[in-house]
Each structure stands twice: as C-alpha cells, then as structure tokens.
Length: 473
Figure (cartoon, rainbow, N blue to C red):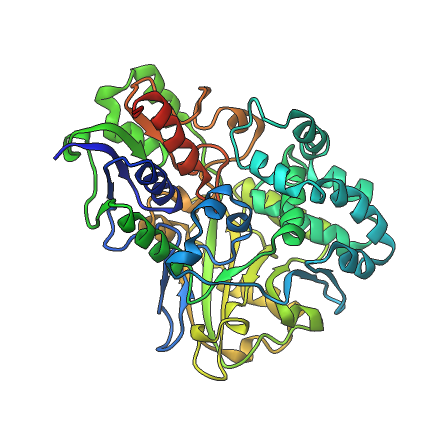
C-alpha cells in the first residue's frame, strides 16, 4: 500500500509529525523499532512491584509551552496533567533554598535581596510568554516577532555565568540559575546557556513544570489514541535499516539521529550531505537512577518536600565545575543531580505509604562509570537519611540508555550539542532545517530545531514543511 507519509520513530516528535499530517487528511504510517511506542516517553516497573518509574522523561515544562500540545489537546484522549505544589526548588547545604513558585511575585518575595533583580530579568518576558515561548520552540531564523526575540537574545546569547553574576548576589539564587541553565548540558561559561536558564525560569511561572498522571507513557498513549482516531496506522517491532524496508510514500520523515538517517538513506542522499550528517556532534551522556523508597525524601529544606523537581548541586561554582567536567570528558566527583519526586503528587506511582525517586546526572559520552554512590552522596548532603529509605534501585548508564533508545547516542538525551554552530545548523545549514537534498526525505527528530524535550515541535514543524513541499492538496 502506498502512503502519503511514513514516519520512522515514535518518540514525541515522530508522533507529533504523524498527528499533524493525519489531521490534514493525509494517509500516515508510523514505524517503531521497539515493541512499545514512545521513545523517551516510557514508564515501567523496574524496581519493586507496584512502583511505576519514568525511564527517561519525567517532568514536562516544554510540553505545557508547546503550541502543538495546546492545539491537539491530549486531555481529550485521556491524558491528565498534575501540577506540583512548587515547580522547582534549589536547596542549599545549610538548609536554605531558592524556591520557584508559579507566582512570580511570590518567588521574588522568597528571593529576598535578589528578588527585585530576578523580577527585572524575567518579568518583561513573562508578560509576553504566550508569544515568546512559541518563538523559542521554532526555527531560529526569521522569527515572526523579531523585536521580542531580539530582546530575549540580547541576554540569552550570553553565558549563564555572565547573567548569574550580573543579576544575583546570593549563593542560593545564583545556584538556582546555574541549575536551570545546566539543562543545556553545556559548560556554564558557554554562550546560549543563559537562554536555557531564562527559558526554564519563564516556563516555571508561565505554565508550570507538570507531570503526567500514571507516568510519561501516558503521554505516548494519548498521542497514539489521537493518531489512530485520525486514521493513522502504527506498526511496532519494525526496525528500519535501509530505504528498502519502507513502503512506497510521497514523504518519509525520520525521528532519528542524523547518523541513523545517513545509514538508512545514504544511497539517496549526496555524499557531501551524508558527511555533514555523520559529523553532527552529540554531547555528554547521563547516568540515571530510579528508586523505590519507603517514604518521602527528608530534605533539610521544607519547601523541597513540596516540589516536583529538585535541583541538587549547591552553589553556582559547584554546579559549573560538575558540568565543565562532564563536558570535557571527566567524571564529576560531586555531580549536579536533577531529581523528580512524582509520587508525592501522583499516588498511582507507588504503593500506599511508599514513594518513588527519579534522578540523573551528566557524565561523559559513553561513560561506564557507576555514579550511584556519587549521586546518592550528593542527595544525602541536602537530605540526611535519604539512603535509609532506599528499598530498591535501578540504574542505567549512558550505553544502556542508548541501547534502550537509539536516539540517545552515548547517553545524549538532548539530540545534539547546543552550541552556536549547531543552533543555526541543526543538523546542517538548510532552511527549512527539516529538509534534505532529497525532496521527499525529512528529518523531524530532536536533532532539528528547537531541539530536545517533550514538546513535539520538531515533528510539528517538519510535518508542516512536508505539507508545503510535497504533500500539497
């Protein structure tokens, strides 16, 4: 059977591309190599019976900022979002913390003498978040609101180090901004890290950092339900190794790494372009731990006990050191730990009276070092007695993550290094960036703009491009 479009890969972007095309009445087939759809949106029982763990993604600030999710409304297909009491807390070793509330005024009150400066940094963009965030989740060239984007870029193109030290004087708030910027998986003195830090601060106030009820797999399940309601077809357990594995179609969209696209389609793409795909740079990996816990994590700071996400790393200098080490191929002795405690807000995640813990840290690409002791020692600094709660743990190093999801090469969960060169040439310098020299082949993975995260916008933009280029009525 011939299709209008075949999508290879069922991560958030592959599913978003398929839904976008199916909503326009196109006949769509989605192929997934694994037996379960979802890519990074999968949940499983990997510790003890009754505990549900998110294997990859857990908290989803960019989903709530995504125009695709706003338009599709997965809530109509069974998805339920849960807003934690507090989006993010950044505890310090002395028991204090920088606490981000949904309300910006409440947050500035908590920040004390840094509150006014934080408001000056964030408020101008928060006032226009409904216009700015869609721009940040779109290709970087030719924004539809150039003045607003230019204002953001004046600060965002700087390093997190520059912004933190220019605006803030307290260790807690500087550390908070370091933690936000560290989602870039870049040294904090690198350009663009300020943009990542600011974007995550804005989302905390504009739309929150929610979690899906029942686990991140429920996002994939709702997207599948939506796609099938539109007539889309899905086949799992179907790895694609060459173009010969695909049925006839007017357009092929790859939710894959650039290197995987090159391997599959090398005979249908120019050699020079294939070399560029092969040269695309991936970043550091992550070491992931899921815990089954006998009770809630005993943070020194009370607010951290009410947060969906806790950034564990201390001062700006400590976090900057850990990130610089991971990015330069060294093992951080005191890693920056990104931790989520979903079961505090979603009782379906654990048996009564028990809790789950979810955390990861950045490590060199492909690193086989067991970071369990270092991660747990870091958490213990801020939550004495944490180790006593551990009933069972499940770990995944970068290579195990890559085996689980081939779109995480070397454990890179971001789709590729976020640096100036790859910001504008992602995966190569083309416009639209989702196209290839073969007019029927498109790339829709996190290796295209706007990059990593569960937002579906790479797939949405790639599908819109395919509709304009080859799938016109």
